Length: 203
Image 1 (tube, rainbow, N blue to C red):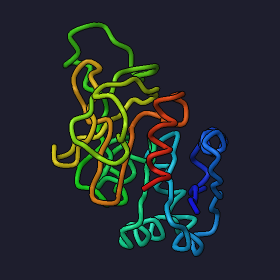
Image 2: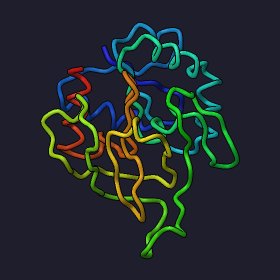
Image 3: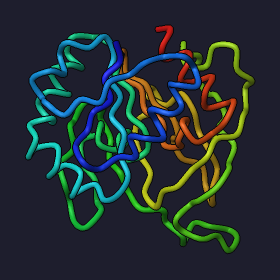
Image 4: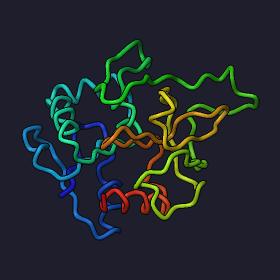
């Protein structure tokens, strides 16, 4: 069974709908003590990093997610949920993250943009596969997904499984052992996104 972490900072309905299209049932998890009982968990997220960490701590979900990751069972972070997997974010000052993957979350540096682009980065953009992983099984080397974000991850290349260019190239998908993260929203990305979620189900 897959658990969807509810800490009052994610669009749970769209994620649930995507899995329903795959014929897979997932459960919304509100109690931190129940997290360890799932085979896989998803950490969604929409909004500010600092607020999200405060909500996770208030519900004791921060320690529950870290304990789950240590079991080596699959964990998937989506959008802000991916960013929370890292050590820290510079949004509204420095805020410590879950620290499951080494790296930091930073705002798009528009001084590096060679053309006039708006932040947030919003809409369809291409993800280029840079490392083979089970979540990309059966997929093309490049495909489009839906993005909505103003911050992105900076991390070692060894954790990067997908990259995207918007002004400059950044890590748009990551993996560290059993921990996966996607900056775009697979649940809002039609066939390509459903293919990723299906591969996650089949891990």
